[in-house]
Structures are given as C-alpha cells and as structure tokens.
Length: 383
Image 1 (tube, rainbow, N blue to C red):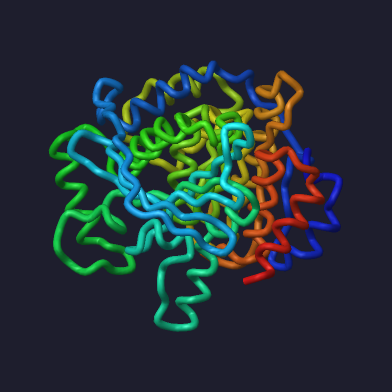
Image 2 (cartoon, rainbow, N blue to C red; image 1 turned 90 degrees about the horizontal axis):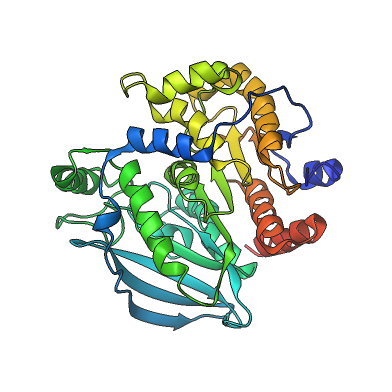
C-alpha cells in the first residue's frame, strides 16, 4: 500500500492521529458482485428522481473572471435541470492549463454552511477568531489549487446562490434547504433529498467539465468535509469517472459483516425494500461499488456518539473491506481503501488536511508519496 513505507513520516506531522490503517491487516471477503448489480441496488435506494432523458444542456456562463496571485478564479452558472440553475467557482493554477498540458480535476462539495461554495475556496467571512479557524479548515479547494489541481466548487441545493426565497442565509440554512426540498420533491416525489439531488447535480457538472480539453479526464478526484463528505461517499459509487475520493467527518459506516462475507445475504439486502435501509448501511454497498478506486475515509473516534458506539465493528470492517479491494484490483494497480483515524472531533485539522491533500496528489498526479507529502506540508504551513 502506498503509505506502508512511511509510518514514521506520517506520525511525525499528523499529531492528532490515533493510527493510520492502510490495509496491513485483512480478513477474507466474499467474491465481489459485478459493479452493475451494486449500482442498480443503489439506484433503487435513491428512488425515482430525474433520469437520463432529463439531462439538459448545461449552457455554462462565465459570470466573472478574477486573476489572483497564485491562481485564477471563474464564477460560473450552469443548468442541472431545465428549471434549476446552479453556480460554482472554478479555480485554475498558474500557468493556466491547456490542451497540451491538461491537469487533474478535484470536485469540492462544501460542508453545511450558508456560504456554500465560498466556504471551500476561501471567500467566506468570519466574525470571530473561532469562526475563522473553522473556515480555515474548510477551504480545501484553495489549498488544492495551490498544489496544481483544477478545482470545481459548486453550490448545493439550498446554499450559496442556490436559494429560492428572499431570506437571510444562516449557518445551516434550514429554511432555504427545506424550501428547495419541497419544490424538488413536488417534481420527484419518489426521490431522496438532499443527497439524491446532490448526486444528480455533481454528475451533471461532471458531464460539463469533462468536455474541457484542459481537464485530465483520467485523473478526477473528489474531496469533502461533513456534508461534503456525505456527497463524496454517495456520489463516487455512482460515477466511475471519479478516480479517487476523500471523505472527512462524513456519515458513519454501519458495517454489516454478512454483506461482505455471504453472497446470499448481500443479494437479499439489495433486493429488499427500503424500510430497513439508510445511508449508514448503504455505505456498505457504496464502498463495494467504488472498489477498487482509491478512497480515503477520515474519521475521529470522538466525532459523534454513533461512531464511538460502533467503533469495534468498524475496525473489523476495515480489514474485510481491504480484502475486498484486493480482490477487485485485478490489474495490479494501487486501489486502496485507506483509513485515517484521529481524535479531533468534527473538524478537518491541518494535519489531516495535509494527509488528504498529499493522498490526492499521489493518486491523481502519480507523484512519489514523499514528494506529495512535502508539497502539501509546504502549502498548508503558509496559512
């Protein structure tokens, strides 16, 4: 595995880490089902939302172009449904990428914050020092563009510019999100909001982005914190164009051992109705559908109570998941399910950000891991 050779390096600068699991221990998993069967099960869970026939021309419009000291920022709008316009920032490192020198793309869905996309690109404002420190943990897109990635940071439905009612935004934007939910479910009563909508919106944005010749379409990643991590864990299984993903402090995996070790139980679970399903146990299916594409799962043992209570089961789960990844990785590649466990609550501390940025740099640029770590460390230490 990619980090096994550097355990001392990892522990030197990841001060809040409990330990890093990168596949050293493993237990046998059942032979994997075809990805198509797993995706079909996930589609059934997400319900009857918009379909392929509902895809529209994105009609991307550039609202503003800004040149900054170390990168360019575009403010854009684009259509995700015929009556739904989305907004995003696209960040480009200097010099501007070209067809001849295309660059990896990282999707950066934002956490729960009324500012939406501004949160991950360093444009959100803080009233107190505590708020400022939290925002510095959220602006992953800004750090990644400085590492050489193209960054796409969209507003999720009910956040940022994607609000439908004339009321002030707030930390959680409950009123805006609820208003968007009611109007969207009126169109798609059998779909799931917000996460089903987020999957659809990210995939439609990706349809648009892969058409740009300056995007290295073989190296697309996704990273998110909190709500953004849920988006990572829900979207990556559904779209194989995403090569690598990082989920920090997102939904807790409710590991169900028999789904990984018994074909009959797995098939029965996929065919069952949604009464006993939720995103926590559907993450089992999502991880299966993601494999062997690399995924980094970052979680703090003191994040939420549900995580602490299920910790022992999750630890065993990581071993079995690792074996599943090994079985899926038939081409001798670097498919990894890597886990970073820490003790810093519901946060994205600098050491974990360094690790995550270096991990993406390694997988999408194909750099030596030591070089990736040093680059990430130099970028984040400037803050």
